[in-house]
Image (cartoon, rainbow, N blue to C red; front, side, top):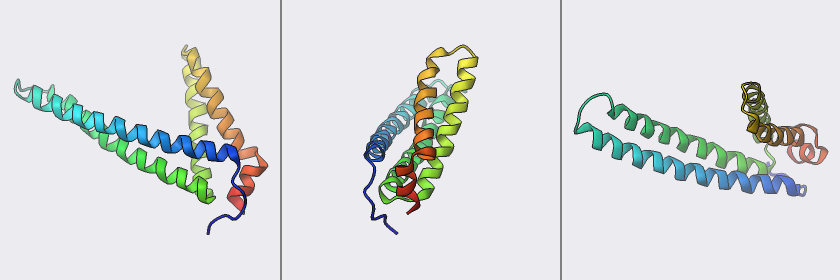
Length: 137
């Protein structure tokens, strides 16, 4: 069921940024797969365990393709007002907050930016009335 209300502007921006992130994720996956294949072919001439690095990169590239597909579905869910995309975003931003707190406690003080961004996203999806109306109507 598609939502008939007007989509909040902040949510439109987040959906567009999620699509852009998906595109960048696909480019990174492509780089991993091509680079991993190159490394595997290059080091296989020498033999040994070094070729596993290339296999790891290819596997990581395949995983990134899955993440990119998930990002596309989430962004599409924002546009359609599907509550599951809101729930996934809340869970991921909560995990991002926890990860940033751990990083800050470990001395990586630049993670304060990550903490702030994930906190704002979490706040928006959990507290903002316009956002909740969009997904729950």
